[in-house]
Image (cartoon, rainbow, N blue to C red; front, side):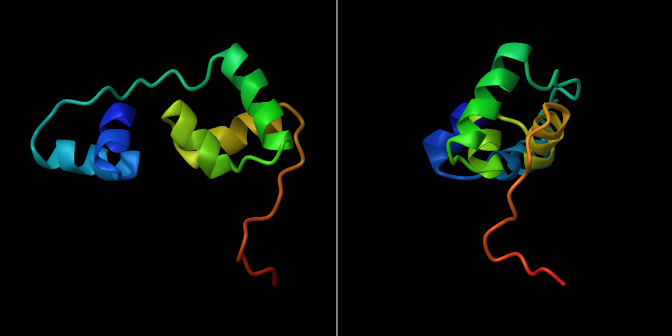
Length: 85
């Protein structure tokens, strides 16, 4: 799905939705991130990459990335434009 999202310039969730509408069986047992990817993601996030950037890089949902970052003890930044009440 990540290759298709890059090729067609759309979010991987959009690609997933198109495939589901066409009856394509999708894997539901995504393993998440490998330990080497988690370490890399921590470094990239700390160097300024967003959780969205990392989600696109690894082909997972942003919530998956933030879950692994939190488990690694990373202090998450607020989202640009996010309202704090």
